[in-house]
Amino acid sequence: MKANYLLVKNIAVSGLQWSDYRNREIDAVRKAQDEIYALHAAGKLAPQIMTRLPLEKFGEAFALVKAAQTTGRVLLVP
Image 1 (spheres, rainbow, N blue to C red):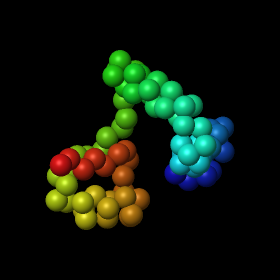
Image 2 (tube, helix red, strand yellow):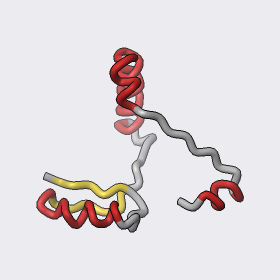
Image 3 (cartoon, one colour):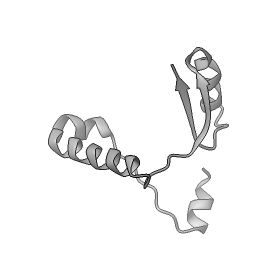
C-alpha cells in the first residue's frame, strides 16, 4: 500500500511482533486468539482471500507474494 493513500484517507497503520506477546503474555494471547476464532466462527470476520492453491504450487504462491501482486490472502491447501 502506498503511504500517500494512507495520508489522504487519514488511515493509521500499526503493527506488532506477535511472538513477543506470545512468549511474555501467554494467557492474554490465548484469550485474544479465542476471541478472534469465535468472531470468525460467528461469521463476523471474513478474511479477504485472493486465491487458493494446492500445496504443490507453493512456489507460485510465494512468487505472487514476493512480487506484491496479491490483493488478499493466498491460501495453500494441503
